Length: 551
Ligand code: NOJ
Image (cartoon, rainbow, N blue to C red; front, top):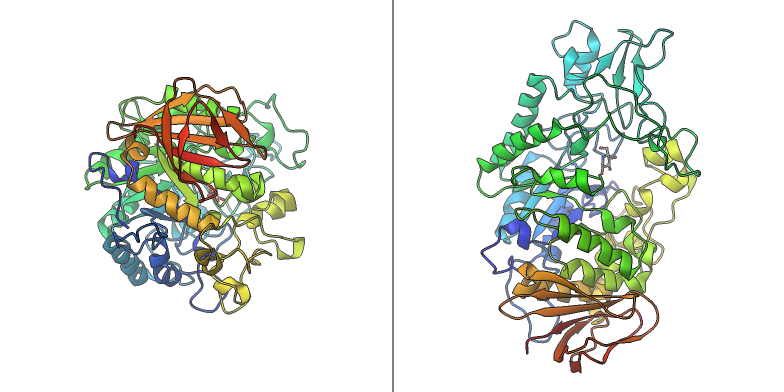
């Protein structure tokens, strides 16, 4: 399938992004860990490049436009690749540069785009830059990282905590100074106030842009600049009483360790560089609340194309809360900005475990019909739930430090291809166990079931791509008398669509005064195509529908 025909929008506005966690997608080497060759082998599942659609049947492939691959760089894997030891190569575990080149080529052949992770805040402690930097106080790369003397008495330079628990500083006995790491001690933070660091890291972007990647997902990009004086953070007034005792990070207001004004200057430089190439895209992992977050688009659209919008991942599954969040974004976004939505990723609970499998279908319709670029996490199209991870199976360093309930292994279990052992992911026992229900919940089985979650995703993706109202129609919420339903119009001159989502396990009849009639073109149950009166609109329990309203 090709990217939607609405040629007047850039690709990253028309696209649906699909995140692949490469360790968990497909193992072709027989070591229990996914690899790039595995992604290559499975490209047709994501998008076979054809534009054929069997009339009334099921679209031939998922119809993804953009693949985002989490880090595949050489790494000791202390944080499974987010500890990069070489920014311009591929870890042998995943393949090599030639495999990656073939992957880029094959992705492009199918009319898709490829986005890769860029990890600017920290390297691995095994990166040659850090090895040099820590070798002596006089080393020319000493200032490439953030080194400070201990406080009198020997304690760390300030009170900052690591996201993964404990202090954000580690003392290097050799040179008697502490270095900063807001994640693992194996992830020392680069000093972006040092010109040479910036140059070297811009060169990394150039390397990949020249190699043909279409964009970057920039890891914790808001963290790359810290307060010049590294002032202490004040305590947070909203601390969760259940935080593990070592979670210093969770107990502070993050005034000085991240989101400093100067970060926008660096982001402008990223953007300037990308703009020298044809049609590339910068996405950022940015967690802040609205007024701070919105700044990441830049003052005049010279910032990130898409600061990731994670808000919907953390809301209670309630229609009103969702409408409020979407309306808030729609109201705040500048005219040059473009919305985007994320419902799942490699750091959070699986969507189906968060809201249940029945509502996960409603969530699919929401994600793929809101105005903005959706990002879909691998396996959510099957309704994969959290894996069962016991202490002895745990791999994630966050879990080791903050406790089993904080492990992210739950959402990183292998992709479920078929009913064979290990779900067809690997011939040997995978690095994480496959989800318990894989015999029913896999691509082969769901492909054969016309009403499966997978086929819902396929149809939604296909429909979205071919419906201008869903790609670039305006968004207008409707007030309805049932606060457990969320309705919005996507209006467009070529025909508008009404999306009606029932967030609960109970049917409701909705009345839209003067609504006229419309044609239901899709239900999340995939069983409904009928003309309906909008003044008497039945939504079954756990149902979402799309209605063509101008017919
Ligand atoms: C955010 C990434 O999503 C997460 O997986 C990683 O552990 C941290 N950044 C550190 O790079």
